[in-house]
Length: 156
Ligand code: COA
Figure 1: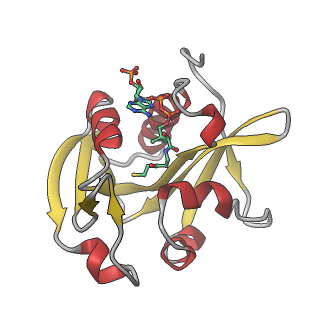
Figure 2: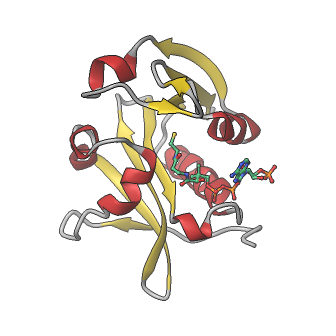
C-alpha cells in the first residue's frame, strides 16, 4: 500500500506520451491530444516503470485543471491515485494557482468519491460534454456517459 507520500517528476516533452495510461482516463486519442501538448504531465515511477500520471492544464493565472489522472490497472486501489491528487494540489499551490479543477463523468462514482474525499466540491456541469465531444455514445455501468461534472478546490 502507498499511504504516505510519493515523489513525482515532470515528464519532459521529448519523452513518448504514455497514451496507454492516459487512455485509462479518457476515451479517445483525439480527446487526449486536445490538451496533452499544452499540459504539464507528472509521473510516478518505480524501477523505471510509470505507475501513475496526471496532466495539469493552465486555464489562466488563477485556475489550473487536472485534465487526466490514471494509475496502471494492476496498481489501482493501493493509494497511488489519492497521493497523485495530493501531489497535484501541492504543485498547483507551488505555482500560485488559486483554484484547482477536475472533471469527471456522470457515471464515475469512484472518482467522484475520491475527489470529494480530497476536498474538491462539485461546481458545475458541462451538459452533454461526452455526447458533443466523442464520436459515438459510451455506456458505463449501463448508464449513458453524457455530462461532465466539474469539481473544484480552493487553494488559498
Ligand atoms: N471501487 C470502489 N472504490 C475504489 C476502487 C474500486 N474499484 N478502487 C479504489 N477505490 C477507492 C479506494 O477504496 C479509496 O478510498 P479509501 O481511501 O477511502 O480507501 C479511493 O477509491 C482511492 O483509491 P486509490 O487507491 O487512492 O486510487 P487509485 O490508485 O486506484 O487511483 C484512479 C484512482 C481513478 C486514478 C484509478 O483508479 C484509475 O486510474 N482509474 C482509471 C482512470 C480514471 O478513471 N481516471 C480518472 C478519470 S476522471
